[in-house]
Image (cartoon, rainbow, N blue to C red):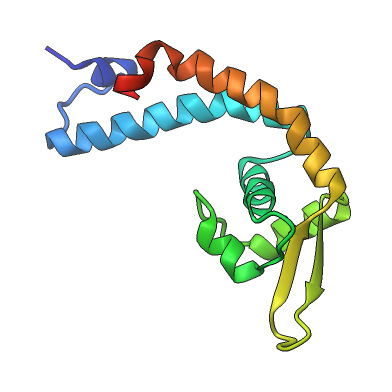
Length: 141
């Protein structure tokens, strides 16, 4: 008898290992969760990585972070953080400047516009998380 995932993806052969099936289940679950968040973010013209960067910078408070630090803190890695930051800066959501002590280092901070956008998204994102996972209860979460 085929497992649920095997049936969902219409795979005829059994998975090679239980680990493979578990891994693919995690990918499928991640995709399902991110699709809902993508809809909320799309209304603000943001991608998941852009949202992640804005949240990282908000979490840093008034402190600036080096681009390298932003990259290290990202939940999902983005190979082209420079372009991602370019887009956020063009929209006025972040500001960048060269470090005075080491001109090779670029420092990044969130702007008031970026903070406003995140505040606007906070409620819908929390609602979405509750909708997806609230049924689990505190102990299971």
